[in-house]
Length: 156
Image (cartoon, rainbow, N blue to C red; front, side):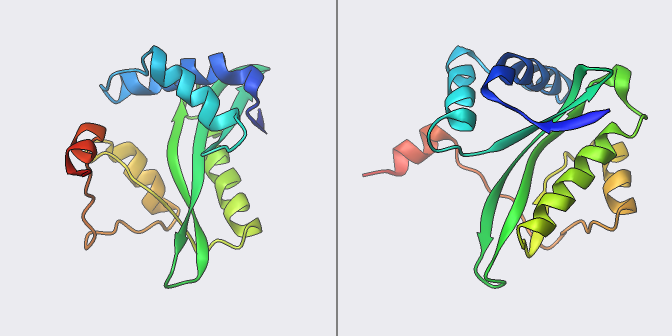
């Protein structure tokens, strides 16, 4: 197994893995416009995220996407893990854990004060892994969201 940063040449592979993840989470896959934005936002002049690909015997089988936010209270960056996904046929081989440890390494090297991510409430298997690593489920924080249309409606 190898873990490497994704490059612009990996865009189609990355989109394929993201589509598989969307199917797993029962969410719509990226449409044509989103696919173009994924390329621009990950590999354009001002990247908004970074992607890593895990390969098994030279075949891409998993990925992670992350970006930095900032904690004013800690006065340090926070590494936010947006996606981590392993194709079903390659699970239970340590690939997901290796991707997580890659994130931990990056957060440590970058002086991050913390690392955060979200997990769907029905994904008990992932929750067990995260809590087994010592991650804390933050029950006192509530996640809020506005969609693009809702944001537009609030903009004067």
